[in-house]
Length: 243
Ligand code: G3P
Ligand code: CA
Image 1 (tube, rainbow, N blue to C red):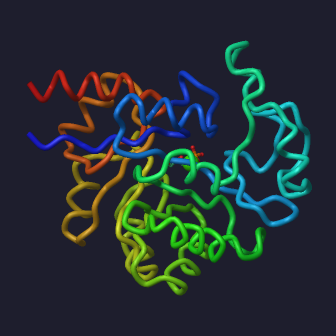
Image 2 (image 1 turned 60 degrees about the vertical axis):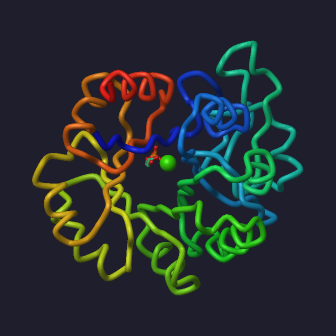
């Protein structure tokens, strides 16, 4: 039986501070196929791996990521909110993540296009090339402008369109943007969404799938990949059904 590939959402976010190197390393140790992470840029234009546009929820900093230089962001603690064990965990740049993880697979989510973060797409693509990771990366975004820029800059890199809603609404957008994967919110994925994706030649990467019921539903729907905050549970459950 074909099982979905497993990506750790923000690493192994239920067990370690989201979007940090320890979280990605834990997901890798658990045996995921890949990891998902979110990108913003700092004031001095570095690619910063963090989910929110502000520092407040996940670090002891305050305000917009984009109003601080990397040196200032590096002083922050991105671990203490997840418990004592993680105190002192730092926010990482994408370069540090590539250095720390190497040849695993990546869903790299651009949170805002060059309109907000000038040059973010080109910087990311250059770094992917520098680490020779093009075949391991899928660039994903809710931001159509960003996906358009990525496709103009690189005809070959895999891209995925993030959305919440019926897949039929997004097929023509995905075609216009020359997307390879549909990346729908899983709670709104039904049989007809998979059918229309297949009919139009798209693979389906579903996020986020965190409960035994959803994992079973994702297997039955034959999605191509599952992105989960709890990769340990997903991998264990897939093993059970593969028997
Ligand atoms: O994997 C896609 C998913 O991460 C999109 O939502 O808000 O968790 O970045 P969000
Ligand atoms: Ca994300």
